[in-house]
Image (cartoon, rainbow, N blue to C red; front, side, top):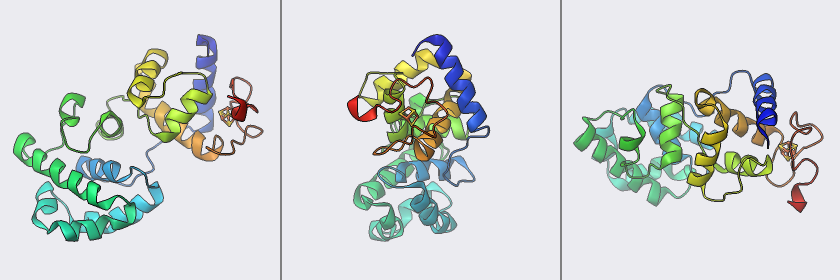
Amino acid sequence: MKKPEVKKMLSILKKEFPEPKSALNFSNPLELLIATILSAQSTDKIINEVTKELFRKYKKPEDYIKVPITQLEKDIKKTGFFHNKSKSLRGCCEKLINDFNGKVPDNLEDLVTLPGVGRKTANCVLGNYFGKPGIVVDTHVKRLSQRLGLTEQENPDKIEFDLMEIIPKKEWTDFSNRLILLGRKYCIARKPKCEECPLQKICPSAFNVEKK
Ligand code: SF4
């Protein structure tokens, strides 16, 4: 996609989704971090159902350490992959206590040292809680960036770097959230609704996804 089309795309997305927000429920950075780790291979609906109870019970990093791991697994079971996720939560909370005074760091370098936290999760926390722009390459952002011709990469980190070149920095978080919303509403993985999509005039894959 060329520069003027990128500008057009950003303005169409802004019009369609004026107030893009993360669909995950949270009230502090620890909750957002935990919810984002849990969200891998799950849906926001399930995560919000699970965290409603979880965040009542687990308020500080210490709370995730002091319960038996089998209890933590039970409490997050519905999110799937609960053995690995409970290990990540424990490891992450342990490191928060040992290295960061129990606080969630507000920079990428430190965030990615936490177990279970990659650039996607780190950028999500930075952008949606700390107001520091970050591009979140989840499954929707990956698929849409490729369909919209913004990247030819497959690797999420490489896609992130491609998008960082094209999208103005102050837009990174909102742009990610808007692509996620577009992916849910129109650009569905199996059957995109190109006929209803507001980007159909500038999207190189419009009405042509299967052939791409
Ligand atoms: S026009 Fe179709 S392929 Fe392009 S972003 Fe919209 S739904 Fe996806």
